[in-house]
Image (spheres, rainbow, N blue to C red):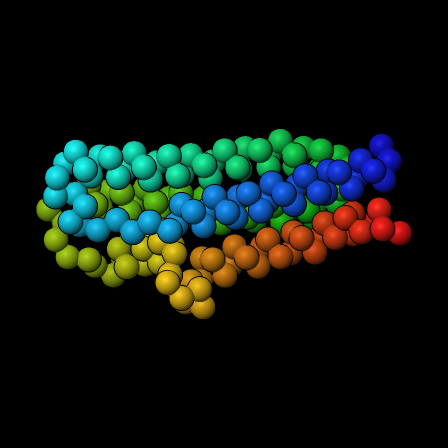
Length: 158
């Protein structure tokens, strides 16, 4: 396994990580409102739409998982560890997304309580990225992964 293999693995891994980022940003770009559930069929259509967007996140994760197997063999173990941090961060999104759906499925829920406000901060992208802590954390994790991969991406230039 030569330098070219390491370069190709690092390149493919970084592309997969960017696909995850893009899928997450796409997923978090939709706002579900109480009025969306006033017509039950419309509400189910929206839930199906959101689930398809979440499926995009999961597909991107699965693709990256497959690449991570090669990375674990060819590259630095710290890359695998950093990727696991990203996966845990996305698991929080998954859990909060399910809680978010449960809240909106509850026909008796009228007011938005503090718990729902906190859930929305994770599930829905803020209009101002400076106020989006979930995005900030995700971008920091991706930045750290990219820094670890740069060593392998720069070996071809040398």
